[in-house]
Amino acid sequence: MAWTQATWNAEGWRMDAACQDEDPMMFFPVGSTGPAVDVVEAAKAICAVCPVAQECLMFAVTTNQEYGVWGGLDEEERREVRRQWRRASRSVQRQAASA
Ligand code: SF4
Image (tube, rainbow, N blue to C red; front, side, top):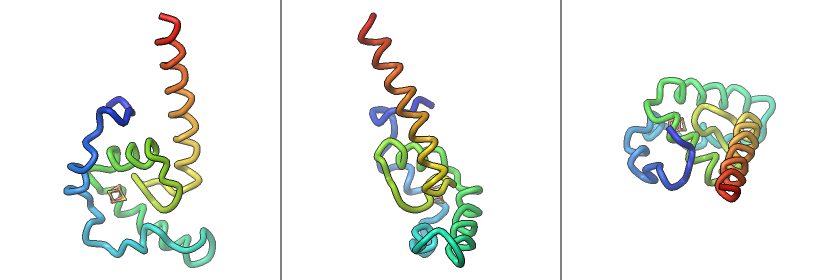
């Protein structure tokens, strides 16, 4: 699956989200220490069995969602994925410009 905004189904994947009946606060805890650690782990456990985790993560990375758990990754983990995606995107753009 290519990670581009042009190819993902912006809304369809949400219909299959494993979290759709969960408390949204579980995915957006306040803080990142203490009780929030357990909340984030509980959210990640739901993401681990979510059939659209890849689409969710792609959405979060390509639309720069800074907060919360998306696609099984917390904010810090997603920042690294975003850095990698941006590097790859710039590389593709440079190759296209030089072709
Ligand atoms: S990966 Fe997690 S946050 Fe994303 S739709 Fe699935 S359960 Fe929800």
